[in-house]
Length: 337
Ligand code: KG4
Image (tube, rainbow, N blue to C red; front, side, top):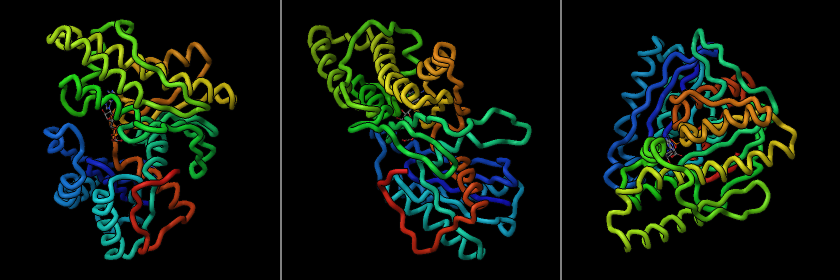
């Protein structure tokens, strides 16, 4: 079984090969063009995908030492994501599968993030979460608690009602005049700051849902007042601001996750998505493991942000189930799991 995975839902063009369950290559072209705009510009993302898709797939095949004719199926992200970006990967997958006469496997991007935990390279024996487990999916577009009953049976039990956690971090970073994406910058600064230095609004939302727009607004309004009093306020306090922001976001995320784990009696807890690269969040997971007896699963850095290895992995599970899709399946921008 040789599966080619293709991911193009946002601003990363990625292709990966998994052969007989082991990852042989995972090639990703990121798009620096968005940095100047402080966020992803959909039209530019789509054009960059068009330029990147052929060389990225080519490199993934070469790195894996696999010929096109050896492919068993093409797995691709069908959604959710930016429509213009998705269309490039979906169209390419359709064209390639048709020309090779092999099946296509559609993958939900969010399921892909969860299944990133099952990606293995040769000689890699990391523990994989047993079912059922909870997965906190936190990225630039998502903040969800997912109950994972099986590879193909997942339920979103909590989600953000407005901004995603990564989006909030990126926007707060932007109002401080930092670069894009803000996540890694805030992470780096936070290591040198005091997490208790500033307090920001915390949401009061029912059940397992999240909200980050209030925090973002509170951050912005507080900052405006402080800068009005002292124009150098941000420069003088950037480490404390970053540490306090990170602390607040991690605290909000973990509180609901703790509630879900307790209510459902689940102690296997995973994290996925771009924000799972965050040092404070990773530390909070380890802290919860020792404090609440959780077994935690934290993906390797390469599988936290968008990547095709997770799409190829999801494709492997579906291939075994002969869960193929037809040519007429369009991309979708919004969807649950
Ligand atoms: O999963 P991902 O690559 O794609 C999107 O959904 O967009 O996640 C990107 C998000 C961005 O918001 C970025 O700022 C955030 O993940 N991020 C981080 C870190 N690295 C990336 N957030 C906090 N700490 C980090 N170290």
